[in-house]
Length: 424
Figure 1 (cartoon, one colour):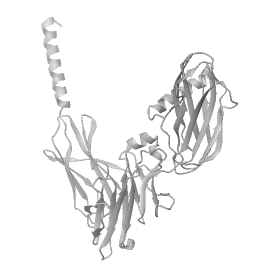
Figure 2 (figure 1 turned 135 degrees about the vertical axis):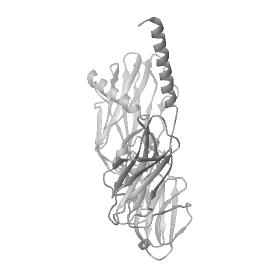
Figure 3 (figure 1 turned 60 degrees about the vertical axis):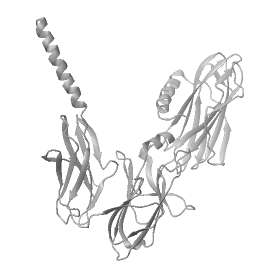
Figure 4 (figure 1 turned 90 degrees about the horizontal axis):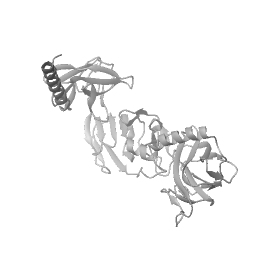
Protein backbone atom coordinates (compact mmCIF):
# COMPACT_ATOMS: atom_id res chain seq x y z
CA UNK A 1 0.00 0.00 0.00
CA UNK A 2 1.44 3.36 -1.05
CA UNK A 3 1.82 6.20 1.45
CA UNK A 4 -1.05 8.45 0.11
CA UNK A 5 -3.42 5.45 0.03
CA UNK A 6 -2.47 4.57 3.61
CA UNK A 7 -3.18 8.13 4.78
CA UNK A 8 -6.63 8.12 3.12
CA UNK A 9 -7.41 4.75 4.73
CA UNK A 10 -6.44 6.04 8.18
CA UNK A 11 -8.59 9.16 7.72
CA UNK A 12 -11.60 7.05 6.75
CA UNK A 13 -11.02 4.75 9.74
CA UNK A 14 -10.88 7.78 12.06
CA UNK A 15 -14.15 9.10 10.64
CA UNK A 16 -15.87 5.76 11.16
CA UNK A 17 -14.59 5.59 14.73
CA UNK A 18 -15.80 9.12 15.44
CA UNK A 19 -19.19 8.20 14.05
CA UNK A 20 -19.29 5.12 16.26
CA UNK A 21 -18.42 7.27 19.24
CA UNK A 22 -21.26 9.58 18.32
CA UNK A 23 -23.71 6.66 18.29
CA UNK A 24 -22.74 5.70 21.82
CA UNK A 25 -23.54 9.20 23.06
CA UNK A 26 -27.23 8.91 22.10
CA UNK A 27 -29.34 7.83 25.06
CA UNK A 28 -32.94 6.68 25.23
CA UNK A 29 -35.45 5.56 27.87
CA UNK A 30 -38.94 4.13 28.21
CA UNK A 31 -41.22 7.14 28.68
CA UNK A 32 -44.67 5.56 28.59
CA UNK A 33 -46.29 2.14 28.87
CA UNK A 34 -49.80 0.72 29.30
CA UNK A 35 -51.90 -2.36 28.65
CA UNK A 36 -55.30 -3.08 27.12
CA UNK A 37 -57.79 -4.16 28.15
CA UNK A 38 -57.33 -2.98 31.72
CA UNK A 39 -59.15 -6.10 32.95
CA UNK A 40 -58.88 -8.90 30.36
CA UNK A 41 -61.60 -11.52 30.44
CA UNK A 42 -61.17 -15.29 30.36
CA UNK A 43 -59.01 -16.19 27.31
CA UNK A 44 -58.60 -12.55 26.17
CA UNK A 45 -55.15 -11.44 25.00
CA UNK A 46 -53.45 -8.62 26.92
CA UNK A 47 -51.69 -6.11 24.64
CA UNK A 48 -48.87 -4.08 26.19
CA UNK A 49 -47.68 -0.91 24.46
CA UNK A 50 -44.64 1.23 25.21
CA UNK A 51 -42.89 4.30 23.85
CA UNK A 52 -39.26 5.30 24.06
CA UNK A 53 -37.91 8.85 24.12
CA UNK A 54 -35.76 8.49 21.01
CA UNK A 55 -34.79 5.67 18.64
CA UNK A 56 -31.01 5.22 19.01
CA UNK A 57 -29.02 4.11 15.93
CA UNK A 58 -27.75 1.05 17.82
CA UNK A 59 -31.25 0.05 19.00
CA UNK A 60 -31.72 -3.68 19.67
CA UNK A 61 -35.26 -4.18 20.96
CA UNK A 62 -37.92 -3.61 23.57
CA UNK A 63 -38.60 -6.82 25.48
CA UNK A 64 -41.82 -7.61 27.33
CA UNK A 65 -41.15 -9.90 30.30
CA UNK A 66 -44.16 -11.54 31.94
CA UNK A 67 -45.18 -14.41 34.18
CA UNK A 68 -48.49 -16.06 35.05
CA UNK A 69 -49.38 -17.13 38.61
CA UNK A 70 -45.76 -16.74 39.77
CA UNK A 71 -44.56 -19.15 37.09
CA UNK A 72 -41.40 -18.84 35.01
CA UNK A 73 -40.65 -15.61 33.13
CA UNK A 74 -41.51 -15.42 29.41
CA UNK A 75 -39.68 -12.93 27.19
CA UNK A 76 -41.32 -11.46 24.10
CA UNK A 77 -39.60 -9.06 21.67
CA UNK A 78 -42.09 -6.24 21.10
CA UNK A 79 -43.18 -5.29 17.56
CA UNK A 80 -42.74 -1.81 16.11
CA UNK A 81 -45.89 0.28 15.61
CA UNK A 82 -43.89 2.96 13.80
CA UNK A 83 -41.71 5.73 15.17
CA UNK A 84 -40.87 5.07 18.81
CA UNK A 85 -43.95 2.98 19.70
CA UNK A 86 -43.90 -0.79 20.28
CA UNK A 87 -46.34 -3.46 21.37
CA UNK A 88 -46.28 -7.01 22.69
CA UNK A 89 -49.01 -9.53 23.36
CA UNK A 90 -49.52 -11.76 26.40
CA UNK A 91 -51.73 -14.70 25.39
CA UNK A 92 -55.17 -14.99 27.00
CA UNK A 93 -55.26 -16.69 30.41
CA UNK A 94 -57.97 -18.39 32.45
CA UNK A 95 -60.27 -16.47 34.77
CA UNK A 96 -58.57 -15.58 38.07
CA UNK A 97 -55.00 -15.84 36.73
CA UNK A 98 -52.48 -13.25 37.93
CA UNK A 99 -50.27 -11.74 35.21
CA UNK A 100 -47.16 -9.75 36.11
CA UNK A 101 -45.10 -7.88 33.55
CA UNK A 102 -42.39 -5.28 32.98
CA UNK A 103 -40.55 -3.90 29.92
CA UNK A 104 -36.82 -3.77 29.15
CA UNK A 105 -35.05 -1.50 26.64
CA UNK A 106 -31.90 -2.79 24.91
CA UNK A 107 -29.54 -0.86 22.70
CA UNK A 108 -25.81 -0.97 22.21
CA UNK A 109 -26.14 -4.70 23.03
CA UNK A 110 -26.94 -3.88 26.66
CA UNK A 111 -29.92 -3.36 28.97
CA UNK A 112 -30.41 0.42 29.23
CA UNK A 113 -33.78 0.89 30.96
CA UNK A 114 -36.61 -0.98 32.66
CA UNK A 115 -40.18 0.06 33.45
CA UNK A 116 -41.53 -0.20 36.06
CA UNK A 117 -38.10 0.34 37.60
CA UNK A 118 -38.30 -1.85 40.70
CA UNK A 119 -41.60 -3.72 40.64
CA UNK A 120 -44.03 -5.38 38.22
CA UNK A 121 -47.41 -4.40 36.81
CA UNK A 122 -50.01 -6.81 38.19
CA UNK A 123 -53.16 -7.71 36.21
CA UNK A 124 -55.84 -10.14 37.34
CA UNK A 125 -57.80 -11.85 34.57
CA UNK A 126 -61.57 -11.41 34.82
CA UNK A 127 -61.38 -8.67 37.46
CA UNK A 128 -61.60 -4.91 36.99
CA UNK A 129 -58.16 -3.32 36.73
CA UNK A 130 -56.64 -1.97 39.95
CA UNK A 131 -56.84 1.70 40.90
CA UNK A 132 -53.52 3.14 42.08
CA UNK A 133 -53.77 5.04 45.38
CA UNK A 134 -50.94 6.73 47.30
CA UNK A 135 -51.66 6.29 51.02
CA UNK A 136 -50.58 8.96 53.49
CA UNK A 137 -48.78 7.27 56.42
CA UNK A 138 -50.86 7.11 59.58
CA UNK A 139 -53.99 8.49 57.91
CA UNK A 140 -56.97 6.10 57.40
CA UNK A 141 -57.74 5.59 53.69
CA UNK A 142 -61.34 4.84 52.72
CA UNK A 143 -61.65 2.24 49.95
CA UNK A 144 -64.97 1.11 48.43
CA UNK A 145 -65.47 -2.22 46.68
CA UNK A 146 -62.92 -2.72 43.91
CA UNK A 147 -59.28 -3.52 43.14
CA UNK A 148 -56.43 -1.31 44.30
CA UNK A 149 -52.68 -0.93 44.01
CA UNK A 150 -51.61 0.97 47.11
CA UNK A 151 -48.24 2.46 47.96
CA UNK A 152 -46.68 5.12 50.12
CA UNK A 153 -45.24 8.27 48.54
CA UNK A 154 -41.66 6.95 48.72
CA UNK A 155 -42.40 3.61 47.06
CA UNK A 156 -41.14 1.81 50.19
CA UNK A 157 -44.07 -0.61 50.16
CA UNK A 158 -46.75 -1.72 47.66
CA UNK A 159 -50.04 -3.43 48.51
CA UNK A 160 -52.36 -4.95 45.90
CA UNK A 161 -55.79 -5.77 47.31
CA UNK A 162 -59.25 -6.78 46.08
CA UNK A 163 -62.25 -5.66 48.16
CA UNK A 164 -65.35 -7.74 47.50
CA UNK A 165 -67.68 -6.65 50.34
CA UNK A 166 -70.15 -3.80 49.75
CA UNK A 167 -68.70 -1.68 52.56
CA UNK A 168 -66.07 1.03 52.70
CA UNK A 169 -62.85 -0.41 54.02
CA UNK A 170 -60.64 1.82 56.18
CA UNK A 171 -56.93 0.98 55.77
CA UNK A 172 -54.12 2.64 57.74
CA UNK A 173 -50.49 2.24 56.70
CA UNK A 174 -47.76 3.33 59.11
CA UNK A 175 -44.06 3.40 58.17
CA UNK A 176 -41.62 3.28 61.08
CA UNK A 177 -37.95 3.86 60.31
CA UNK A 178 -36.06 1.19 62.26
CA UNK A 179 -32.58 2.57 61.50
CA UNK A 180 -31.33 -0.60 59.74
CA UNK A 181 -27.78 0.78 59.62
CA UNK A 182 -27.34 -0.08 63.32
CA UNK A 183 -25.41 -3.38 63.52
CA UNK A 184 -27.34 -6.10 65.32
CA UNK A 185 -30.67 -5.16 63.74
CA UNK A 186 -32.23 -8.13 61.94
CA UNK A 187 -34.60 -5.97 59.86
CA UNK A 188 -33.37 -4.68 56.51
CA UNK A 189 -36.33 -2.53 55.44
CA UNK A 190 -38.48 -0.12 57.40
CA UNK A 191 -41.18 -1.65 59.57
CA UNK A 192 -44.70 -1.30 58.15
CA UNK A 193 -47.89 -1.56 60.20
CA UNK A 194 -51.10 -2.24 58.22
CA UNK A 195 -54.47 -1.96 59.95
CA UNK A 196 -57.94 -2.54 58.49
CA UNK A 197 -61.39 -2.25 60.04
CA UNK A 198 -62.68 -5.46 58.39
CA UNK A 199 -60.21 -8.03 57.05
CA UNK A 200 -63.07 -10.24 55.85
CA UNK A 201 -63.90 -7.61 53.21
CA UNK A 202 -60.59 -8.36 51.43
CA UNK A 203 -60.57 -11.37 49.11
CA UNK A 204 -56.90 -11.21 48.02
CA UNK A 205 -53.90 -9.19 49.18
CA UNK A 206 -50.30 -9.02 48.01
CA UNK A 207 -47.45 -7.19 49.77
CA UNK A 208 -44.34 -6.03 47.89
CA UNK A 209 -41.46 -4.50 49.90
CA UNK A 210 -38.28 -3.30 48.12
CA UNK A 211 -34.92 -3.33 49.89
CA UNK A 212 -31.64 -1.44 49.48
CA UNK A 213 -28.53 -3.45 48.54
CA UNK A 214 -26.32 -0.80 50.17
CA UNK A 215 -27.89 -1.66 53.54
CA UNK A 216 -27.01 -5.32 52.94
CA UNK A 217 -23.40 -4.38 52.22
CA UNK A 218 -23.20 -2.21 55.36
CA UNK A 219 -24.46 -5.05 57.56
CA UNK A 220 -22.71 -7.83 55.67
CA UNK A 221 -26.06 -9.58 55.14
CA UNK A 222 -26.36 -12.22 52.41
CA UNK A 223 -29.06 -11.23 49.92
CA UNK A 224 -30.32 -14.77 49.27
CA UNK A 225 -31.24 -15.09 52.96
CA UNK A 226 -33.82 -12.29 52.90
CA UNK A 227 -37.44 -13.10 53.74
CA UNK A 228 -40.67 -11.37 54.69
CA UNK A 229 -41.12 -11.17 58.47
CA UNK A 230 -44.37 -10.53 60.32
CA UNK A 231 -45.59 -10.17 63.88
CA UNK A 232 -48.91 -9.30 65.51
CA UNK A 233 -47.62 -6.39 67.62
CA UNK A 234 -44.36 -4.99 69.05
CA UNK A 235 -44.46 -7.48 71.94
CA UNK A 236 -44.66 -10.53 69.65
CA UNK A 237 -41.77 -12.47 68.12
CA UNK A 238 -40.99 -12.11 64.43
CA UNK A 239 -42.07 -15.02 62.23
CA UNK A 240 -40.98 -15.90 58.69
CA UNK A 241 -43.89 -15.57 56.24
CA UNK A 242 -43.86 -17.51 52.93
CA UNK A 243 -42.63 -15.15 50.23
CA UNK A 244 -40.77 -14.86 46.93
CA UNK A 245 -37.44 -13.03 46.66
CA UNK A 246 -36.77 -11.26 43.34
CA UNK A 247 -33.00 -10.66 43.36
CA UNK A 248 -32.83 -8.61 40.15
CA UNK A 249 -35.64 -6.31 41.28
CA UNK A 250 -34.50 -6.13 44.95
CA UNK A 251 -38.01 -6.83 46.22
CA UNK A 252 -39.78 -9.39 48.43
CA UNK A 253 -43.35 -10.39 47.44
CA UNK A 254 -46.00 -12.41 49.29
CA UNK A 255 -49.70 -13.16 49.13
CA UNK A 256 -50.93 -12.44 52.66
CA UNK A 257 -53.94 -13.58 54.63
CA UNK A 258 -53.77 -11.12 57.51
CA UNK A 259 -52.63 -7.59 58.31
CA UNK A 260 -50.27 -6.63 61.12
CA UNK A 261 -46.59 -5.60 61.11
CA UNK A 262 -44.30 -6.44 58.19
CA UNK A 263 -40.64 -5.99 57.25
CA UNK A 264 -37.88 -7.53 55.15
CA UNK A 265 -35.26 -9.28 57.27
CA UNK A 266 -32.94 -12.27 57.52
CA UNK A 267 -34.20 -15.81 58.05
CA UNK A 268 -31.02 -17.46 59.24
CA UNK A 269 -28.25 -16.96 61.75
CA UNK A 270 -25.65 -14.43 60.60
CA UNK A 271 -22.37 -14.06 62.47
CA UNK A 272 -20.61 -10.71 62.32
CA UNK A 273 -17.45 -9.42 64.00
CA UNK A 274 -18.76 -6.12 65.33
CA UNK A 275 -15.86 -4.85 67.40
CA UNK A 276 -12.10 -5.39 67.73
CA UNK A 277 -9.88 -3.76 70.35
CA UNK A 278 -6.12 -3.84 69.87
CA UNK A 279 -2.99 -1.67 69.77
CA UNK A 280 -1.94 -0.59 66.29
CA UNK A 281 1.62 0.02 67.57
CA UNK A 282 3.14 -2.70 69.76
CA UNK A 283 6.41 -2.67 71.74
CA UNK A 284 8.85 -5.48 71.00
CA UNK A 285 8.68 -8.45 73.45
CA UNK A 286 5.74 -6.89 75.33
CA UNK A 287 2.58 -8.90 76.03
CA UNK A 288 -0.38 -7.53 74.07
CA UNK A 289 -4.10 -8.28 73.94
CA UNK A 290 -6.64 -8.53 71.11
CA UNK A 291 -10.32 -8.53 72.12
CA UNK A 292 -13.03 -9.43 69.58
CA UNK A 293 -16.83 -9.20 69.85
CA UNK A 294 -18.81 -11.59 67.64
CA UNK A 295 -22.60 -11.21 67.32
CA UNK A 296 -25.42 -13.22 65.78
CA UNK A 297 -27.30 -10.51 63.86
CA UNK A 298 -29.70 -13.02 62.31
CA UNK A 299 -33.08 -13.97 63.72
CA UNK A 300 -32.43 -17.67 64.36
CA UNK A 301 -30.09 -19.60 66.62
CA UNK A 302 -26.45 -20.00 65.51
CA UNK A 303 -25.10 -23.40 66.55
CA UNK A 304 -21.54 -24.66 67.07
CA UNK A 305 -20.05 -21.20 66.71
CA UNK A 306 -16.26 -21.20 66.50
CA UNK A 307 -13.90 -18.25 66.46
CA UNK A 308 -10.24 -18.62 65.46
CA UNK A 309 -7.20 -16.39 65.21
CA UNK A 310 -4.29 -16.79 62.81
CA UNK A 311 -0.94 -15.10 63.48
CA UNK A 312 2.05 -14.87 61.13
CA UNK A 313 5.62 -15.78 62.00
CA UNK A 314 7.11 -13.25 64.41
CA UNK A 315 4.02 -13.08 66.65
CA UNK A 316 3.89 -15.69 69.42
CA UNK A 317 0.77 -16.57 71.40
CA UNK A 318 0.78 -17.52 75.08
CA UNK A 319 -2.55 -19.38 75.50
CA UNK A 320 -3.31 -23.00 74.65
CA UNK A 321 -5.85 -23.03 71.82
CA UNK A 322 -6.53 -21.06 68.67
CA UNK A 323 -10.25 -21.92 68.57
CA UNK A 324 -13.19 -21.39 70.89
CA UNK A 325 -16.43 -23.28 70.16
CA UNK A 326 -19.68 -22.39 71.88
CA UNK A 327 -22.72 -24.59 71.42
CA UNK A 328 -25.08 -21.76 70.49
CA UNK A 329 -25.40 -18.02 70.04
CA UNK A 330 -28.94 -16.63 70.23
CA UNK A 331 -30.18 -13.80 67.98
CA UNK A 332 -28.47 -10.52 68.95
CA UNK A 333 -26.32 -12.28 71.55
CA UNK A 334 -22.67 -11.24 71.68
CA UNK A 335 -19.60 -13.40 72.22
CA UNK A 336 -16.40 -11.72 73.45
CA UNK A 337 -13.07 -13.52 73.01
CA UNK A 338 -9.46 -12.45 73.48
CA UNK A 339 -5.91 -13.58 72.77
CA UNK A 340 -2.57 -12.65 74.35
CA UNK A 341 0.61 -12.53 72.29
CA UNK A 342 4.06 -10.95 72.02
CA UNK A 343 6.42 -10.21 69.13
CA UNK A 344 10.01 -11.42 68.89
CA UNK A 345 10.98 -9.15 66.00
CA UNK A 346 9.89 -5.80 64.59
CA UNK A 347 7.87 -5.09 61.47
CA UNK A 348 4.30 -4.94 60.16
CA UNK A 349 2.06 -7.97 60.76
CA UNK A 350 -1.38 -9.00 59.50
CA UNK A 351 -3.59 -10.86 61.99
CA UNK A 352 -6.69 -12.72 60.76
CA UNK A 353 -9.80 -13.56 62.80
CA UNK A 354 -12.38 -16.07 61.48
CA UNK A 355 -15.81 -16.84 62.95
CA UNK A 356 -18.33 -19.39 61.60
CA UNK A 357 -21.01 -21.85 62.65
CA UNK A 358 -23.54 -24.38 61.37
CA UNK A 359 -25.51 -22.96 58.39
CA UNK A 360 -23.67 -19.64 58.53
CA UNK A 361 -21.05 -18.15 56.24
CA UNK A 362 -17.56 -17.41 57.48
CA UNK A 363 -16.91 -13.92 58.79
CA UNK A 364 -13.25 -12.99 58.16
CA UNK A 365 -11.57 -9.80 59.35
CA UNK A 366 -7.91 -8.87 59.23
CA UNK A 367 -5.98 -6.16 61.09
CA UNK A 368 -2.46 -4.81 60.70
CA UNK A 369 -0.16 -3.93 63.60
CA UNK A 370 3.32 -2.41 63.74
CA UNK A 371 5.95 -3.81 66.12
CA UNK A 372 9.03 -1.91 67.23
CA UNK A 373 10.95 -0.66 70.24
CA UNK A 374 9.22 2.04 72.30
CA UNK A 375 6.41 2.74 69.79
CA UNK A 376 3.31 1.69 71.77
CA UNK A 377 0.50 4.24 71.88
CA UNK A 378 -1.01 5.93 74.92
CA UNK A 379 -3.87 5.52 75.58
CA UNK A 380 -3.55 1.92 74.39
CA UNK A 381 -6.18 0.37 72.18
CA UNK A 382 -7.56 1.24 68.84
CA UNK A 383 -11.09 -0.09 68.48
CA UNK A 384 -13.81 -0.10 65.91
CA UNK A 385 -17.38 0.90 66.74
CA UNK A 386 -19.18 -1.32 69.25
CA UNK A 387 -22.81 -2.37 69.59
CA UNK A 388 -24.32 -3.33 72.94
CA UNK A 389 -27.33 -5.05 71.39
CA UNK A 390 -27.52 -7.72 74.09
CA UNK A 391 -26.13 -7.72 77.60
CA UNK A 392 -26.17 -11.52 77.73
CA UNK A 393 -22.70 -12.24 76.39
CA UNK A 394 -19.93 -14.80 76.75
CA UNK A 395 -16.34 -13.82 77.61
CA UNK A 396 -13.54 -16.32 76.99
CA UNK A 397 -9.79 -15.79 76.59
CA UNK A 398 -7.74 -18.05 74.35
CA UNK A 399 -4.81 -17.96 71.93
CA UNK A 400 -3.52 -19.84 68.93
CA UNK A 401 -0.40 -21.97 68.39
CA UNK A 402 1.69 -21.53 65.24
CA UNK A 403 -0.01 -22.60 61.99
CA UNK A 404 1.35 -23.53 58.58
CA UNK A 405 2.30 -20.72 56.23
CA UNK A 406 0.24 -22.33 53.45
CA UNK A 407 -2.97 -22.26 55.51
CA UNK A 408 -2.27 -18.71 56.63
CA UNK A 409 -1.81 -17.58 53.03
CA UNK A 410 -5.19 -19.13 52.05
CA UNK A 411 -6.96 -17.45 54.95
CA UNK A 412 -5.33 -14.09 54.30
CA UNK A 413 -6.34 -14.10 50.63
CA UNK A 414 -9.92 -15.08 51.47
CA UNK A 415 -10.01 -12.43 54.19
CA UNK A 416 -8.93 -9.72 51.79
CA UNK A 417 -11.69 -10.73 49.41
CA UNK A 418 -14.27 -10.53 52.22
CA UNK A 419 -13.05 -7.16 53.42
CA UNK A 420 -13.69 -5.66 49.99
CA UNK A 421 -17.35 -5.88 50.98
CA UNK A 422 -17.25 -4.60 54.53
CA UNK A 423 -14.82 -3.31 57.10
CA UNK A 424 -14.88 -4.13 60.76
